[in-house]
Image 1 (cartoon, helix red, strand yellow):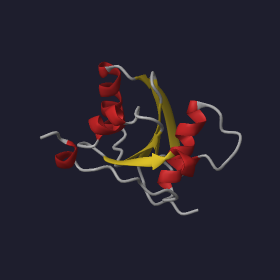
Image 2: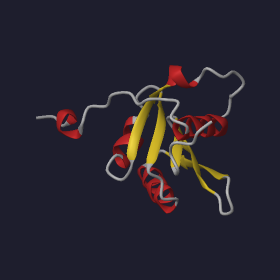
Image 3: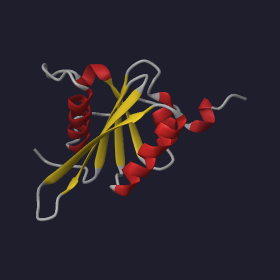
Length: 129
């Protein structure tokens, strides 16, 4: 399968935590994968931004379940290209039951261009008047 995105991340967002998976080129060839879990407090949402930047991530895909995606999405959209992904399009493979496995799966789908983003209105439209 062709790799389309060199440095990407997949986020599995929940009410109390965000599990992030980053994939990037490994020295000597191949791919490296790093997974980390963060809290959804204000400080916990700022930390992943710096963590993702340290890997030079260019594209972040996150699962859209409920309204919990909004804060992580809005806090990253200025620094990274962010894709909001429909949960129904991601859960076609049975047996993935953990947040870590979900984050890795989301990252792999984004990396290979196998998902497309949902529409999120731009900031000027979201801002109340």
